[in-house]
Length: 287
Image 1 (tube, rainbow, N blue to C red):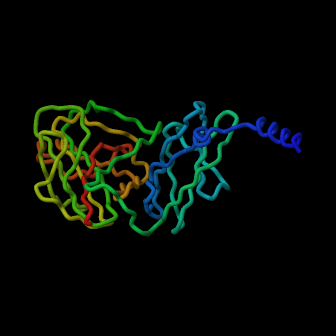
Image 2: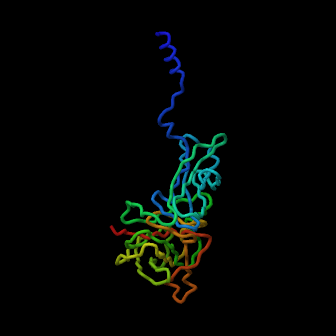
Image 3: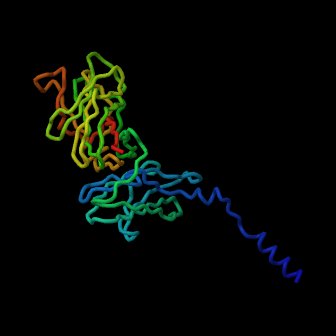
């Protein structure tokens, strides 16, 4: 009996041990957009983007996504930051698998579920909410300050998934010049709903503007000296970050010197290379 016990103990001592920390360090492709409680539109190109939780592995060579339960896989551009465009064509639950590979190993996939078409409105903790756009990896081109000096109105087309008000607009801008910048909120038909000026790049409307869930609006920023921040190839697909959705080609602009009032800007409708102009509406949901 003693001999048998010694044999069992010896076998146990020879088994490899796995640290709990290492067990959780297996790399995976984490989806950051659409966010967890996002309902994605039907028959619209959607941006699926995220990053790799690489931890102990520094030689990740590819990120793969499957939209059909693992039957087929698509390689996403990028590794540490990655993004891919996919158009859901069937309403209901969409299951997305993500996995990473290195030189020798294909790691087990992670699973996320989304609702396509219509579905329950998820909880959001923000109040107010800013439309913080994700990093979409190597497919995009970021310019901290575009050298274009022309006065221009730069906008973002967007929708919200619940009732509430737009309280203002925040802008990421790195250049300062002569003139007075301002922001505006527009309806989709060009009706001006609100505007505000500020000594900083955080603008608050004198009165919050009620907006309708599912309707399209444009938040815009007028810079009389141009030289704006821009990310090209960003809005190739819809960005879903509840309570916000930005459709494909959501970034719009209007050159003020092409219109009757070059010092004041105007309703932006033109698009260029699916650009994102770092304009964020501030939304206060109705509780």
